[in-house]
Amino acid sequence: MRTTRRGFVGGASAATAMLAGGAAWAQKGKYDEGASDTEIKIGHTNPYSGPASAYGVIGKAEEAYWRMVNDKGGINGRKVKFLTMDDGYSPPKTVEVVRQLVEQDKVLCLFNTLGTPTNTAIHKYVNQKKVPHLFVATGASKWGKPKEFPWTMGWQPDYHTEGVIYAKHMLANIKDLKIAVLMQNDDYGKDYYEGLRDGLGKDVGKIIKHVTYEVTDPTIDSQVIQLKDTGANAFFNITTPKFAAQAIRKAAEIGWKPAHYLNNVSVSVASVMKPAGFENGQGIITAFYLKDPTDKQWDNDADMKAWREWMAKYNPGGSTADASNVLAYAVSYTMQKTLEQCGNDLTRANLMKQAANLKKLSVPLVLPGITINTSPTDFYPIQSVRLSVFKGESWELFGDLMSNESA
Image (tube, rainbow, N blue to C red; front, side):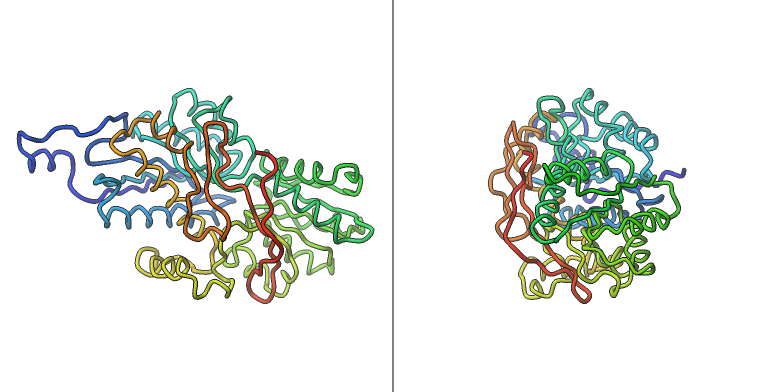
C-alpha cells in the first residue's frame, strides 16, 4: 500500500529565527522531542485510501485548520507542523506509519488518529513510548482508562453509551420489539453491540438476529437480506460510511422498513445519506453531539457562519454537507486550546497534564449545553448526546441531552 505523506509548517525555521535574533537568541521553553521555540510537530494517521476512505476528509480538514492557526501566528508563537499519513484503515500499516512518526519524525504527540482497530494496534506502543495519544477519532470505551493507559485519551462520546441510549429508546417506543443487528466484526462493532445489550438489560432476548461483516467485504447485501428474513421491526446499523450507505439502500430495495438506528460515526449527509438516497433514509434515528451543517436551525448560528467562512477560505474543496468537516474543526480547536494551555512547557508530560485539565471548555460547533471536561481520572471529554431523526435531506434534533453512563 502506498503511504501518502502530507505535512507543512508555516513561518521561519529555527535557523532563520536564530539568525534574526543574533547572539541574544535563547531557548524560551521546556521541550521534549517534537517541540522547540519555533515549531510543534503533530502526528496523525487517517484512511485516505481503503474501505474507510470516506473519513479521509477529516485529515484534509485538520490540515486546513492548522494552516489557519499558523496564519494567525501559531501556538504561543510556534508554528504547527502537521504530519498526516495514510494507513488505509489497516492496523499493520498504522503500526508502520506511527513508528515512523514517533521514531523518525519525532513528533511531540499523536492527534485524532482514526479508527478503533487501527488505534488498538498502536495503543500499547504509544503508551510504552510515553507519547501523548490525544483525542483519538474513535468512540471505543477503552480510550478512557487513564490507570492502564495514561497517554491515550478519547474525545467523542463513547460507543457503549450510545448503544445504551438506542436500547432505551427502542424499549420505550417500539411495540413487540424484535431487534436485528448488523455489526462490523471488530472492537468498534463489539463496543456498540455490548452497549445495546447492556441497555436492554433483562430484555436482551429481544435481539433476534446478529450478523457481522468484515471491513474487507465488498458489500453487506446478503447480511441485510438475512436480517429482513427474521421479521425484525428494529434495525441497529453498526457500520462505517461505505457500508452504512449500502445497508440503507439495500433495506429499501428489498422493502424492509424497520425502525432504523444508525451509529453516529456514519451520519454524514454528504458521504452516507446522499449516496444511500435521501428517500431511503427517512426516519432513521441517530445520536448527535455536534451541530449538523445540514440542519437549518443552525443557519444563523455564529459558530456555523464562522465555520462556513473557514471552509470557503481554507478548505474550499470540502463539502459543507459533510459532518466530518465539522468534527475536524471542533476536535482541532480542542487540541489548539490544550497546546495553548501548555504555555512554554511543551513536554509530553505537561501536554497530557493539560489534556486532563480541561474545565467547561466551550468548543465551536458542539451542541449547546455540552462542554469539554476532563480530569486525571476522567478521560472522556464529551459525555452527552441528543437524538436526531433524518427528515427530507437533513437531520433534525429531538429530545433532551442524554449523558454518558460509562465514564
